[in-house]
Length: 329
Image (cartoon, rainbow, N blue to C red; front, top):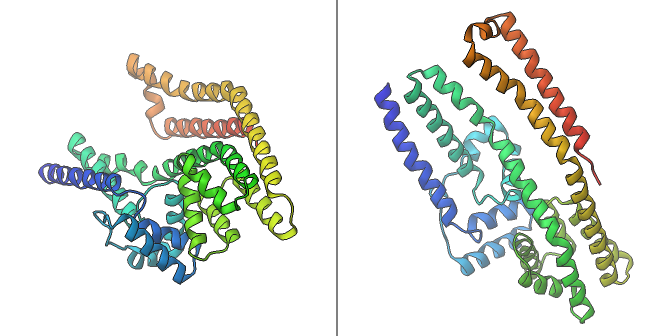
């Protein structure tokens, strides 16, 4: 068993490393990304085909290690098609350039690798499996963190992007021409997303629908204000430059207030982390200094019940602190 686990660890190490290298080498302008965007934004079939052909001609095919593997027909019977759709949306919003099938294979390789490493180190199959259990769920918080970071970065760039569009509109250009100029002068991720909007419009999609697709890929509250303002202006008329300039000022004010809130709530967040970590630190210290004194806490059933109750109260306290320091503006 030890020899087999060691061989599996070595093989999975190279497979996982190969997938990571493949993911890094394959850039964002690939056919699988255009396929993902086409499904996410629900483009018409002919527009989706044109989009995929244009990106293939512009960037060439860079196939990943498992780019031909599709687990949807097989796993979709157990997880449902909605699981793959939601995962695809989350990967796009987190800017992870992997298809759902590739991501699932990558997760499975990591989990099996961790389990085998645990087996090799502990010589116990049960402990190895227990070590790997948290990695079944850790992808959720990671995807959430990456999505939030990308959306926040997009929101911070949005006000300056709108000012560039306003200057272009006042110079006599159209809205999409202003977006093109602003995309050339702006960094990622906002430049990449608006280039996608311009590409969809050039292929025949209405501007309002292209912006709604952008809102699907980047579910930002600030962007929602921009899209709503643009949609209303198209329906009832008005000075688009003034509307976007006012919206940019509103977004700047929201960012400023959010920064002040984050500064004022930092102390509460750090206090919650310290108070939450203190019982674990004390428990490990006592178990190391005087194991006999701490032994009743590890004895079932009352010891385990006490630890379970303490962990539940810790979780409730963390949720209450999070609720207090989370202020929507």
